Amino acid sequence: MFDLDRWQEIFSSIRSNVLRTVLSGFTVALGLFIFIVLFGIGNGLNNSFAKAFTRDATNLIMLFGGKTTLPFAGLQSDRQITFNNDDFDEIVKESEGKLEYASPRYTTNLTVKYGKESGSYQINGVLGDEKFLENRTMIDGRYINERDNELKQNVASIGRMAWRDLIRDGNPIGKDLEINGTMFKVVGVFSDPGGDWDERHISIPLSTLQQMKKSSDTISTVMLSYNPAMTPDEGVKFGDDLEKNIKAKHKISPDDQQGIRINNNAKNTKDSFAFLFVITAVVTFIGLGTLLAGIIGISNIMVYIVKERTKEIGVRKAIGAKPGGIVMLILQESIVITVISGFFGVGLGVLALKLIGNNLEDYFISEPSVGWGLIAAAFFCLILSGTIAGFVPAYKASRIKPIEALRSE
Image (cartoon, rainbow, N blue to C red; front, side):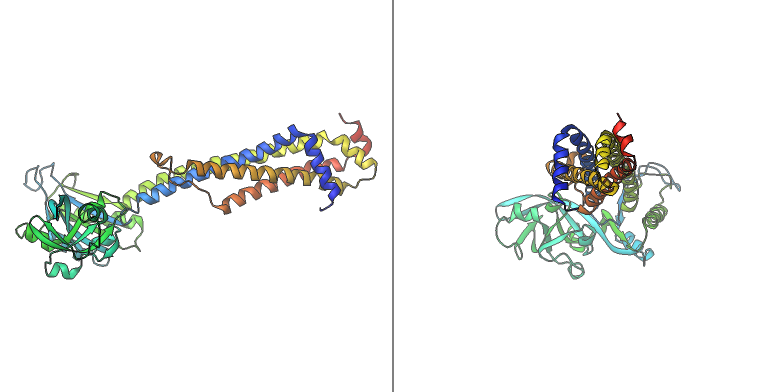
């Protein structure tokens, strides 16, 4: 294996048969290159789907009031459906044991001032669970909590962009914002995976905002996350049951799709990941097909190489070479070509993914990459196939009698 003369002979054979070497090496390199790029793009799709579903809790259900389109139970169509605190309390009571987090939200746009800076911002009246439902992370301070709502306190947790726009420099905690003529003390700053838009929101206690709106108990949205122990199918059924019960309470026809609107991430996740599974399966099939094509290609080339060297094998046997030595010589040459070409294909594939980077985000492909474990497995498969491809014809050729080998064309 480490015979210097043999290695010199191998490299001499490669140099004297450049076209043959390039053809066999190109098959291996191309197979690995396409395999890596395809699987990288497949992982890029996975990354984009994962990012899309981390903006909010993956088990999030949101309920919105709408306008009825069908008459029902003696009531006319075109009724505006509005939720209130009792609706939220009833939902929580009926869903006992099935909920992880829950928060109503009352949303309005109000003028916010700090010093000479001012602007119109979305103000959300919430409970503390909204932090988890929106996947918000505290940069400084704290979020709205239960005590804030009990005491109807004038406190606010503001998004990072609202902090930048209004307060600009310095620590925002303890600063006073004027919201619609009422002073609120900043108790926290949050970041949101939804980006700049969601980070311009300002959250205050729900009870405080409802009091500002003349003691209204109206809420705009009911936000829930179901128990993580539930399966996606159970999450879908839970959402359907919620919709059915709320429609019954507000006397909305079961066939009315506009009376209330429900956004259930369980259903969205199930549909989206079913689609993603199909895409991934197609990419995997094509990638494995490309790898198989590389294996077949190198096998065919090795058969040709051994046939081309039949006379050489006959001469070697005539001067005393052993069959095992002939087989090892051809195998080593096959492995060397496969390994060098494989490294070349891997390098090009990884470089291509680096160059692609996030340039395909418009096509829902984010940070395409392939794990080194998968690359190593594909590389090993090609080396193994190259070894087998070289062994089978080499072994057959080594069994030929010298006189027959010398007569071959």
